[in-house]
View 1 (cartoon, helix red, strand yellow):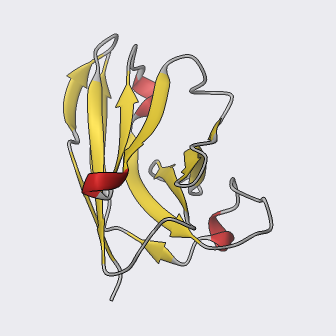
View 2 (tube, rainbow, N blue to C red; view 1 turned 45 degrees about the vertical axis):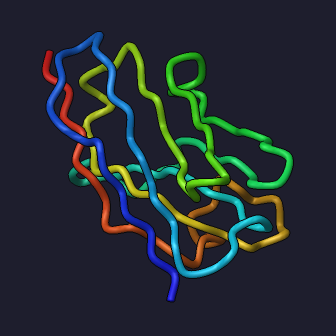
Length: 125
């Protein structure tokens, strides 16, 4: 049974930083793509960043490029999202997801089969 457990959310002032963690268990994730998505109130879930376990290729949404960094620790089966220079518009529930799809649509939430429960990030102005 695949489990993804996020942690690290919280309340931070604009300009501050947070690091989210996603601990994965239940199978070998070497062939997976791991993604972070977020959903703000009244909005659709949107892609934030992704990383492939093999090769470590990373992709980012334009809105977070240069501010957020996704990384993975294979030994710990954990993916991180370092978020710097946070803005109020970054406020959302952030969810970790895992995909085995070979479509290349790393930004498409429908390609991800497994999801964590989410962690709230609130950025005050």
